[in-house]
Amino acid sequence: MKRKRGSKSIGRPGHVASRMARGQADLRPRRTGSVLLLVVVVVAMLTLAAFNFAQNMTTEFEAASMYTMDIQARATADSGVEFVATVLGNKGSVTAENLIHNPQLFMGQVVSASPHLRANSRFTIIAPVEHDATNNAIRYGLMDESAKLNLNYLPNMGLSPDDISTMLMNIPNMTAEIIDAIIDWMDTDDTVSPYGAESETYQQMQPPYKAKNGPFETIDELLLVKGITPTLLYGEDANRNGLLDPNENDGDASPPLDNADGVLNHGFIAYFSVHGRESNRRLDGKPKINVNNGYLTDLYDQLIEAFDENTAKFIIGYRINGPSGKQAVSLTNPVPTPSANTSLSGATATAPLSIVNQEAAEGLTSFLSYVTNSGGAVTRGGIDLSKGGPTSIESLWQLIGTSTRITVNGAAQTITSPWPAETSSVTTSLPDMLDKLTVTADTYLEGRININQARREILIGLPTMTEEIVNAITNAQHLDANGQPSLDTISQHTTTAWLFAEGLVDLPGMINLDPYITAHGDIYRVQVLGFFDGGGPVSRIEAMVDSTQLPPRVILQRDLNELGRGYSRSQLLPMLPSR
Image (cartoon, rainbow, N blue to C red; front, top):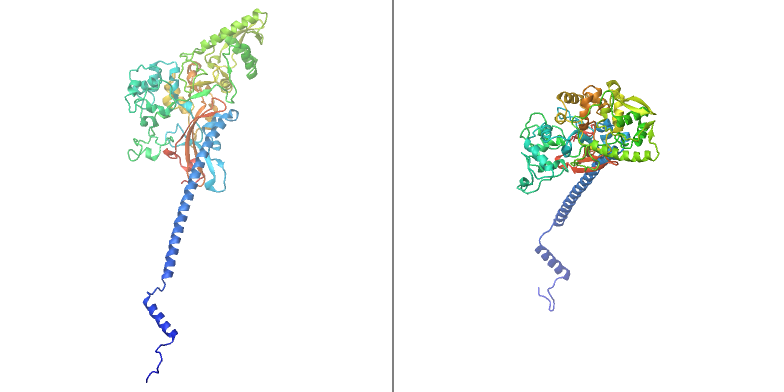
């Protein structure tokens, strides 16, 4: 068939375009489902990123929460220290037995109450039982620094160097070299003791330093003294909780090194202090009456108010004429009386009490002579006080079981002591006398040893102390059936009168022991732990609280967290589960 002229062999435009589109489509790669896969990958990555972010935020939240709890635990422990200072400031409402072991007062005190266990914070004040042979018992109370030997008071004890050495040699692991080095460290000269060390020796150390030639400021300063190592100072008690922990009784299996003998070597820190002293105030915080007051008028008025007329006349008569009949026993080894101006460490020497009283008496005599020459009269209770009181009372125990002669309204009288020597009456009357009276006007007394808590090694070294007396004292420091201090015993031993009342020491013995012993001190060391009921961080701090002044003040505080918490949660608060 012939084409018609002028005709074109062109198909329909839509048909051609369709064929061209199909051809181009055949040339492109197939992408079926790729977008969906991409979406899945993106969603997975975003999910993982969100999960990681949530994990990081959760971790950061937990870290922030733990940090906050750690700060709160420390603040809770700090509150415990301030609580102790407050308790010690309320002298009138706190007795000795409350301070030694009192779970109601010192265990699990709530600081920040919350219904959520992890937010309910408490503190516990805890201590080891010093006389527990197993070294496993605890108590809730304070540690009396007067139960230890105050190194800074050694120069003021009125003892010879040989007597001091004999006393210190009773301390476990003590040597003559260490004793001389301690003395040289404190004395004010550069003379080297036979086995001691002065600055010449310490200048050869790396780094070099000089001998202190002054009192210790902290017990840890002993580490600077020649021959004293951390092992000697702290013993086997690595975490300083006073308990025999498993790692302290396994030989060389784990630090610290120990002899695995089942007995805790406490180190020098259990026997020495640099703070021990007591307030010269009554247990209720009121000032004591100084029986050596040079102003007899004031003394008489104070005695009338605190006791009665017979007691006032007896002490005034004793001051004027001394004892009569059965003579009072004098001190075998009188010691200088601590001065109120002595520093906390107290290494300065002071004048004997008799010299101080003699000077006061001479001044008063001159004053009274002027008054009487001017036509005046100085009397109390019919007693002429114009001649003053030349007799000093070195120990309150000199007033026991004696009498004195005194002229009352022109007639001579014999006045018997209101404190007879019979032990039956001592139990009730003598503690009151020892609490209200004193032989010095000083604001505090330094260095006397608390016989109710002191270790045997300290007691046996005291001047005039005997093995028999030490055995009787340590036997009286017994524990109850639960391994805790006996509160009945503590309540009966608030003064040293119990030694005499129970027949352990006779009157001459009490007079000679009196300058060295006490029944309590007023500077306390405390270990406070802040914690939460629901677990979490535990903060452990140690502090020293001085209650010889009112209000009491914290004189030392340090963090013990690096040593571990030291006590289990069940010990901090028995109702809590161990964690």
